[in-house]
Image 1 (cartoon, one colour):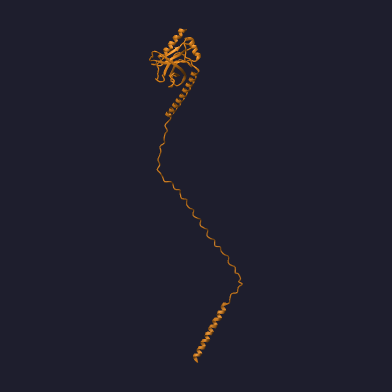
Image 2: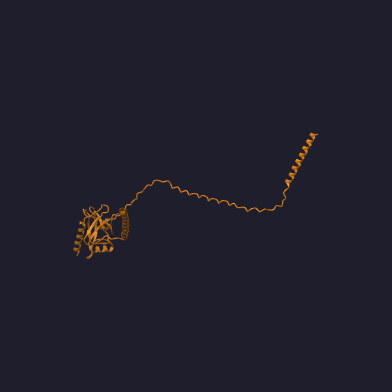
Length: 258
C-alpha cells in the first residue's frame, strides 16, 4: 500500500509539474490542473483547473490563495512556511505528502519557476497528525495565531474582491449606458416684452338732464297792505302849476297893457 501511495504521489506531482502556468513575478500566479482529488490544509480540490497565487501583501510573502480557474471565485487561503530546494526548475513544481489509505493526496509544497524558495503548507493539527503517522516526518502545523491570521486574510480578500466587483460594475454601467440624446436648441430672437393692452377707459354715462320742475302757479294771495295814492297828488300839483302860470301870464299882459 505504501508503494501505491508513493506511485500516486509521483503521478500527481508529475501532472501538476507539466501543467502550463500563467504567472506574474509578484503574486506568482499559477494555473494548475489536477485529474484526481487533492487535499489542501483547509479544503479538498476536485479534478479540474484552479489558480494559485500569493496574497498581495508586502509584509507576508507566505500566504497562498486558491481560486477557480478564471481567478474570480475565492476558494481558500493557506498559510505556508519557506521551503528550500537546491536546484530550481523552469516549471512550477509541486510535492505531495503521503496520506492514510482512502484519503486524497495532500499538497506539501509549491515552487514557482526559477525560485529556490517555495511555499510549504501548514496543516491543522488533526490532519498533520494523520499525515505524520504515515510519513514518519514532521508536518508543519497551524497554531491558534495562524488560524486567526487566516481569518483576517480571508476578510481582507473578501473586502478587496467586493471593491473590485463594485468598480467593475460601475465601469460596465458607464460603458453600456446609452448616450444621452441632446435635443437641438433653437436660439430665438429677442423680442421686446409685450406691452399690456390699454384698457379703454369707460366714458362716463351722461348725466341725466336736470328735471325742471314745473312750478305750480302761485296762488293769488290777498294783500293786506294799502299802496300810497301817488297818482292823484301829482295830477293836482300839475294842474295847480299850470293854473299858477296862466295867472302869471295874465298879470304880465295887463301890466304891459297899462
